[in-house]
Amino acid sequence: MADAKIDLKNLKAGGFIKERGKDLFTVRLRVPGGRLSVERLGKIAEVAKKYGQGYVHLSVRQSVELININFADFDAVVAELGEEQQKVASCGARVRVPTACGGCEYNPNGLVDTQKSALEVDQHLFGTPTGHHKFKVGFAGCPFDCPKSAINDVGFQGAIWPELTEAECISCGLCAKSCVEGAIAMDGDKPAFTPEKCIYCGDCVKVCPTGAWKSAKRGYTVRIGGKWGRRPLVGTVFATFLPEEKVVDFIAAVLAWYQEKAEGAGRTRLGDIILQQGPDSLLEYLRKDFPEYVLDATIPPQVIETQMPLGR
Amino acid sequence: MEQIDLRGVSCPTNFVKAKLALEDIETGETVEFLLDDGEPVKNVPRSLKADGHKLLGLKETDGYYVLTLEKGEE
Image 1 (tube, each protein chain N blue to C red):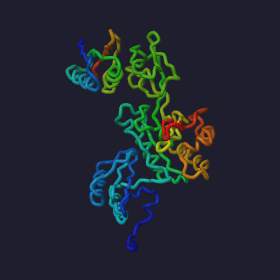
Image 2 (image 1 turned 135 degrees about the vertical axis):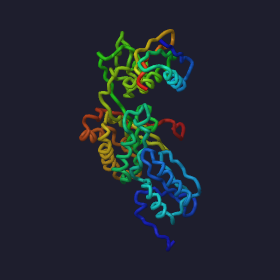
Image 3 (image 1 turned 180 degrees about the horizontal axis):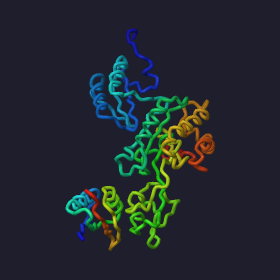
Image 4 (image 1 turned 120 degrees about the vertical axis):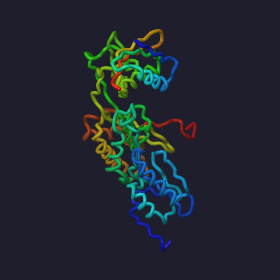
């Protein structure tokens, strides 16, 4: 023990997780949005081969985890991964590495650049101590929501608000056919829009042959207070059409409210603090800086009533 | 006008068949695709539009759809 020298700075944001075996740790890598260059992937494989037991684990939040790493090798592992700018992730009561889908670059459903958002959040907020519990952020490019945004502390879902320029409409009916939410129906030879049924997926804009349906607003639907684990909560909508460039500031504001309101509550997730304080407190706090996007009212995070013990 | 029957063909095979059929058609020519209701009529027109073709119209006929399209630039 006395001759083992470890640079404790490397452990600051966590990412080194104790395993069962003596001296062995899992090293969780920082892969925002789950995208990494093949050069980095190659370097990870090289390091895993050299210091691990010949395999890695893909975490459920898009990270690569090196398995069976001896703690005496921490500095060498960090240094060698650094040759390809690969960093170690965070764990514990901190802002975690954000997840994201492929986004709008190559996925035809993508409405916003989720990869860019994930990188920005990772750059500005990575590892920020919450003082209370973990804090997860996820980005979905559209309402299909493959990344399950509503089970993050703050979850983002790409959205567009459609508007029809009737003069450009050729009455083909493709928009009505495409709208699975039933928000568009043909009324005679023109589409009629029922706004309260629209979930902002943009299918009408994408299918419209003439561009008569246009995107009037673009941004994120923001759900807050979700989590999974022992007692899951589904986050609820606090803001709509939040512009991509306001994402980092918005999360920082949610964090500030959480840090203040969870004071003395111990290891408690954001969703449970919202349940205690009521969603209006957070809505009001966010409205100060984001008045045009924050809703007038919302519902608290939703408890999933199917958990053990049964009959509770 | 050429008519390509994609009924009974599911996604994404119907879209790939449509692409193959369009390879034999000149830019600017018009073609009709017959599509089933449901996923095919929701997905195929959108994918063809994204490929640069011009959608001209959609008509429902006896439980299926006729999509009229003008072939775009290669």
